[in-house]
Length: 510
Image (cartoon, rainbow, N blue to C red; front, top):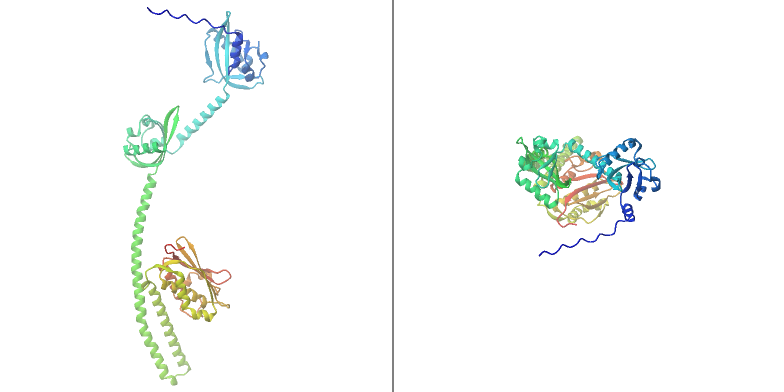
């Protein structure tokens, strides 16, 4: 036997007018109740705030008071239409409904109308909401979408939007369609795999990067257009949401011309490097041959010169009493000429020995090379009253004997071309990267800047009145270049010359 159903619970107390009015006051929207004639019977506090009317001023007034004047003539017919078919109706969604404040200003609203009957009479309950901020947001969103749509269509960059779940294209621009070689309508709804524009490996690589980093930036893939042409593209992928659906924004840059140009440049560089290596080897062979020729020629020329010099000397001794003043002068000219020629040959041999007889470059003390140079110049330094100031020099990769000759030539040059004051010479060094810059500064007569290149040319003498053959600085330049450095001269502050040259630092040198 089934149990008897439970009796329904007794009814609760009836809703009082105070409860009803409390509910109206608590509503977040403005509430206005209107009778069949369109008179306002009740308004809550939100209606006062929204329209700027005191509640007592609204009661009994036509509801058209709250409607902009240009729409008031239409409103009675709309009200009668609602009363003829009373049902809950939202109004304003997608429409531009306007309301009017007490000060005459207008604002957009959304209205919900509900019918109400009491004691045989019909009433309309209107819930009114100010949607000014909502309309502003909608307008801003619409303008943003229009700007994006304009950019999306107008840009020359290939762009596409696809679904994240399956990669099917939702939208592509004309540039993307042109790159792929398809009409836009043939791309929408398809995936890159459907179209065969990228291979499986490239697609999976992009997916892994997207999963690992949340985005893809600058990835290069090879794609094949529907025309069969292969292109190299840089791809960027950013996750976006459209209408609540996860999507991907895809942009491409065709870098095929750049990569082809880079490949052409690489091939040209390889060809140029090969030619430079061949030319360098040819120059090295040529230089070696020239050095050997200079050495042999200089060596072979010394014997005839000694013969000439000896013959002239014997001639002068045997026939000194028969030579007049002019004859003796001719003999002196001949001896001086052969002596000068002898010195030139010796200097030429010195130049050839720089390349042919140099030692292997190894870590050496530049200070030790300077010590050897000062020892060799001891007499001329003392005779000229020269003062040499020196700073500690680093260890460098070099040939100590040639570095000593380099210092000796520069210091000797400072003594030879001194001014009225005794020579003051300063030797210092500074570090620049993996090289040392060594400077030899003097207070001598200086060098005109227009001759700063000429002074290093073999047999170039700026002052014919000074002794020498113009070979010292040429040898200095050759030594520095053999050590992989460079040498130059500048006017020294306060007068004189400042010679500087670079040498590679030995490993571990401070």
